[in-house]
Length: 167
DNA sequence: GCCAACGTTGGC
DNA sequence: GCCAACGTTGGC
Image (cartoon, rainbow, N blue to C red; front, side, top):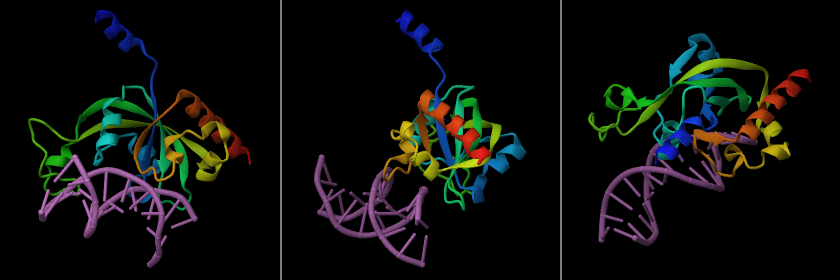
């Protein structure tokens, strides 16, 4: 038991990908705000992934429904998951009448700006890289807004960002 | 704007 | 518990 909890603490950081529509909240908004609470996630699987996040985990920032769809930069997890206040705000579009104050249904992490890529790593770029075939974002029909990424995939994307910037 | 793919809801 | 209907996501 004690051994297991120690192992948990020293495990390597996780990597993630988070989607956002630039017309709602894009990398430019995060660069301006420096950090933000990632509120409004209303999907249980995506919520559960956020609950697995640790401070310092790195996040690929993805623009969906954009002129240029793809990964546009890197962010860091600034706080572990906490209660998403919008679930209790009847004025919010994310209000959830079924959420209980003593047992919140929805969580959010704080995310901090790290960098914006010089050029977008587009969906096509991602799809044409054989090292990324297993990325969840590339799987047919995937709509999850928060997904885990392997350390290898993360490194490949960072390398891609450098190479597309030189084109 | 289209539409495939998916998650959720609610009747039974 | 099943599943049709519905709403949403997101690439194109």
